[in-house]
Length: 213
Image (cartoon, rainbow, N blue to C red; front, side):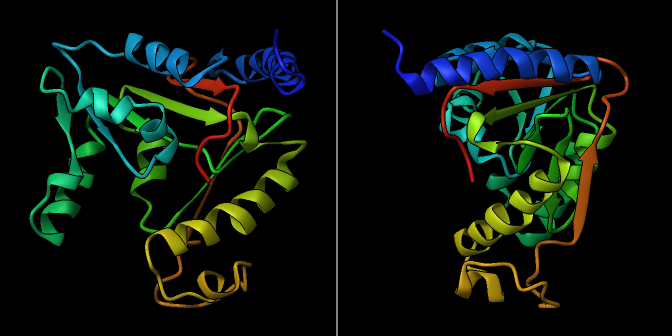
């Protein structure tokens, strides 16, 4: 029998699928990480597609990055870069990949996808370039409206990511946004995707689980 949390997520997920589909996203709901992984892989042609990604912890938690690294997919993996310069070049090349694995710092129940990015490579690829973008997002990322989604992205996700990367920012030390001007600041590029164009380019997979930050 499903738990109250599972029932709530399933009901909310079905509603969110309708909302985001009306905004041009191709949206689905997965009750588990395993279902999300299966759905994500269905969007990728193993032989033809060149696949890349930016920072996307949710995709990693679902096992998607591990699956793509099994040697049978064509991937552009910046973690294999041997120098900072090569890593930058990988990020540039990713803008022309066939499939890009993105993420969401927050989603609004009104149908907007919100991200904050330090260098801008992730939000750039999600906006334009790759033919297909796959976004895996746990239901913990969903907020009631755009304002609360933006606050989650900046007040929850950004401090955690600064701590994760060991950056010297006030939020890394305080756990709260200080609207800093630190050289290590990652709140540099703000993206709100209100509508997906072309329709269906972004494949949004909502997952009935807590994923990412």
